[in-house]
Length: 322
Image: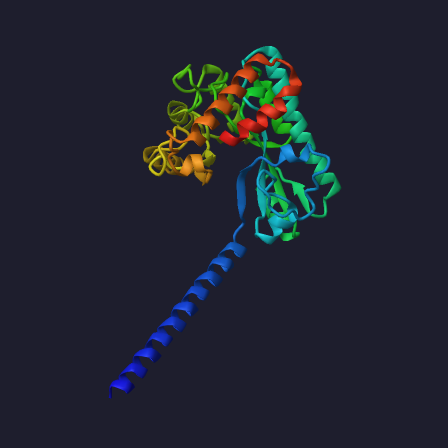
């Protein structure tokens, strides 16, 4: 009797194991099916800086290495990623006319590098300008690449620049980056608030973006600027690369109240999973102290260096802060 009971228990456990494995497989298959049927998009990558490197071929498969690009067309296809927003990023510097022109030139260079890459590989991907382009390219088996401008600094105080960037294919603008600019307050400016939200010029920028059909990206902006944008914008907005403050108390992240307000607005957030935004740093660690020293050194160098050629390396370091 005991032997039969043991056999029955073993058979039951084996059956449960098989059922569990079968259930897991079904869930995985369902996930793949959902992923394959959806139009998938990553709303923020810094790949354009790699396109400035003549040795980088985005049409070839690259094995991942720390510090290298995570994006190329073969890996997009392999991962079932239909579309990406390539961010033309410029770091914030002192707001002088000269520095604004330098930032504008860099943003233009990055955007032009995107078009140059796709002229070479138009059988694999194209720059997309609207929703219809994305769906069309998905059907054609190509990747859709949208363009975003990360940091409104290159706009300066010239509202006509918003139209010019729209004409160049920009379809979202992240209003600011790590410091305040002429548009709004940043969530991480060491000097604190300058406008307590949007500036008067920033209000003009929001209205112009609404008029043209450019998506407003609220990542990086201060809490007050976030609510100013939601109150003013006639269209839903996005947070292209942010996270939840309840998970990690970083000013770059959105509070629960902000997330609810974003949802009520009809907007969306794409989560940024860099360490700084998903777990609180150990501020007593040697690694943290050295990282802060390095960032402060480059910030000082950025303030002192008014020559255009220094900005690319400074920009790449600032990208760590995302």
